[in-house]
Structures are given as structure tokens and as C-alpha cells.
Length: 105
Image (cartoon, rainbow, N blue to C red; front, side, top):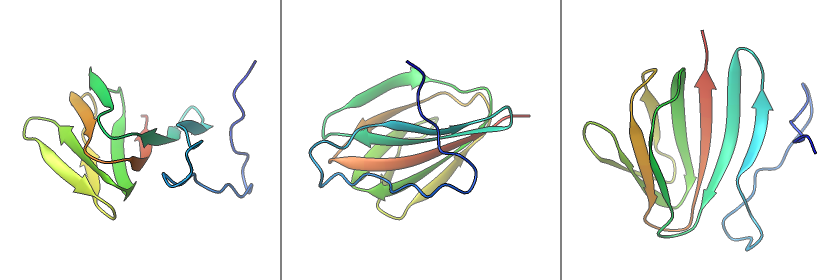
């Protein structure tokens, strides 16, 4: 079954970590960019990886540690940019919601 992606002009409500059923969702995927909401529960780890595009991570709720060349803690409202191919991992310090955008090209 194909994933539903948000269409141009479609309104979508992002999940809140307050909702026990909240989960990670791929929102948009085109040739030029990709957007996903990551919902992580305290203690969740996303293993080290890199993406082929430029990435931004906006912490909407909670707190995570983004382990890059220098570990950084993101809390609600924090935003960070990662250069293409920059290796990183993520550890949720609390139940957290992240909006991740990857730009290709």
C-alpha cells in the first residue's frame, strides 16, 4: 500500500506527543525535497546515518540530542541545518516531535 503524502494546498495537522497514538509520518516527497514529522518517545534512538541532501531539523516538542561532529541538544523551538552528507544520530531525551526537511539538488 502506498503512503499518503500531503498534496499541494492540502492542510495537514501535525501530531502532538501528547497523543499516545502519534507516530512518524512522511508528509511530502518530490524530486526536489522531502518532509517528515518524526515522533520519538523518550529513549528512542535513530542510528547514525547521512542523507544526500541539505537537511533542517526543527524541534517542535520535547528534547533530543543530535550527535554530529559536536553533539547538540535541541528543545522545543530550536532549529538546525545540516550540510548534505553530514553524518548524525538522534536520541530522544523526552517524548519529542521533529519536523525534518531534506532539500535535494
